[in-house]
Image 1 (cartoon, rainbow, N blue to C red):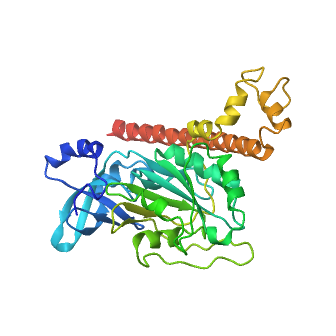
Image 2: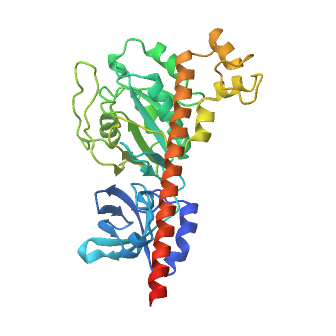
Image 3: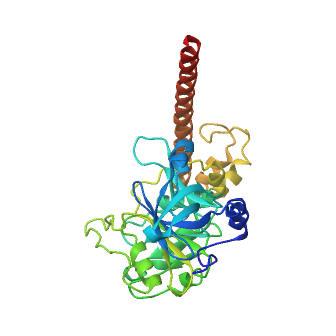
Length: 353
């Protein structure tokens, strides 16, 4: 396998030159476990772990390798192992706030060219969820593509496409049935040498079935959805990078029951460009679109030019980001306080000596 097939480009080549001259090897993370990784080099796939120096220099979780990362290695070929010393610059990354009460960034996948946002055309179809995925996809730096899956069970395909078009300005939208092979040629055109595609979506949206179709064989386990609400189970449990036989790379990801936003202020403006445009016509620059007079956003809602649910979702995202910013600021203050306390303790011990 050559490096171009792995997604090598000029940016990565430039980043690696200084390490190459020192005798290091290069590889790409194909799978991550709790403390170990699978890494693909141009010769083989190896088991890898990070060096002690790497751990010492890492300040938080985002510094550690993620699926899709290019990493600097020393190889132990005879043992089938490698040591990771450095993660090279990521030209794109798909992130979310870690699930639960924490406030750290969780990186889902990196160095992606295209994101397939897989949305099922069953009872679990949700326009507000699509808005959330689009915001995060735009922020990732990759090109979003909306894939409306399970078209064979939907009788209102045209109406659904119209709904999605109302929130996904300029984003390609394809309806597919991987089960029947319908519409899949539209996705195959993205699967070419050097291109990396991430599959993202809720559990049961059909990501694994699409993955199996593009791979050409039964690669990922597929589970049945619940009959009541047609929501899925977590079939894929780990992020994994797959080399497609006909070219291109797929990164399959576990279904997400929650996708909390992370540092997406610019992407909110892009995803909700219609609301931002209305806001420029408000009487006051700092209009909150609540009780202010001559509010163009409220007028657009009253006149049916803007859906109230879409505006409410926009407000919800703004509040979510504001809360995360306050939480991260408080966390930074606590970390700074601990750092100064440690420095003070070190000085005291030094003076005693």
